Amino acid sequence: MNNFIEKILILILVFTTITFAVPLNYDQEACPIGFGRCIDGSIFKNPVNKNPVIKDPIIKGPGESPKWKEFDSFRGKTKTTGTGKDKQYYEWDFTHNDIEVYDKNGKHLGSMDPINGNMTIQPSV
Picture 1: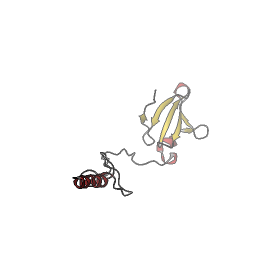
Picture 2: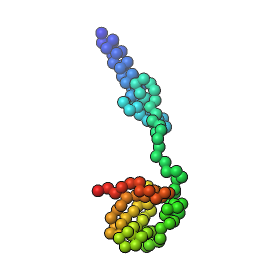
Picture 3: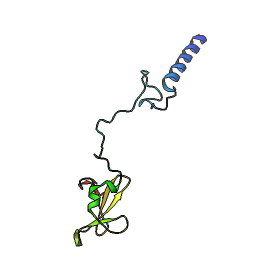
Picture 4: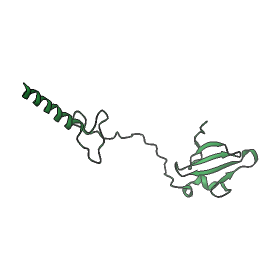
């Protein structure tokens, strides 16, 4: 009887080791419901994003933005348009590759698309 129980325990140990503890290759990720390989033996692969958000064409910096070139230089890397109450200030956001817009008091008005000038992100409250 003890021999039978030992064999069952060994089988359970081997099964769980193979299923959950098999080391992955560098280009593989863990199964979303376990570690290592999935229970059915398949290897989990990243889901493909069928609708990627891509700005077309891709702008790498302010020198490539047609909208950025339209603004007047102000101080340093800041640009401006308008006069009086309608004056706005623009700064290039290198993290998101877009243009940050501010009013004359320095209040953030949102982000502007560097190609067509449409406001893409409204300011956070």
